[in-house]
Length: 170
Image 1 (cartoon, rainbow, N blue to C red):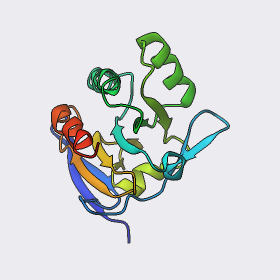
Image 2: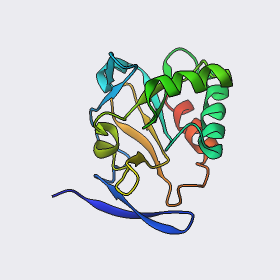
Image 3: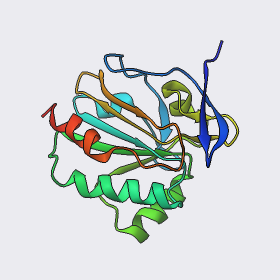
Image 4: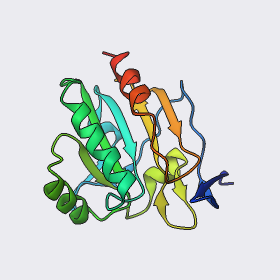
């Protein structure tokens, strides 16, 4: 049976599908698109500290700000850290947005094909077929060390706490 949890979009209820992960859990594997042909999974980033920034769509204000913020933070985190931004945007839309926005330090990955990430991490929005804004920090051994599930889709995550969770692993 698929788990479902409640959240909101501009105060209106939405349904999140999948498990609610917690600190200490093993990070579930997933399959997302790098582009229209190549795919990526958790194992592609083995041995790295991973900050996964999940946004519904890069073409919205909060998602834009969130991705730009983590792109700035990436410069000070070093080579042992990778920041992945996952959305349901098509890969070519992500590439266009990054080029137009000057975002070059985060890796954008698309969950559009089968919503594998959204289902595995409990952020798939049933009503919209998008991923709910959230943050996951995963250590080099693929254990989750920080989780932030936002309850309201239009709110910003706690950037400082997420970055501090990454720095605690360095």
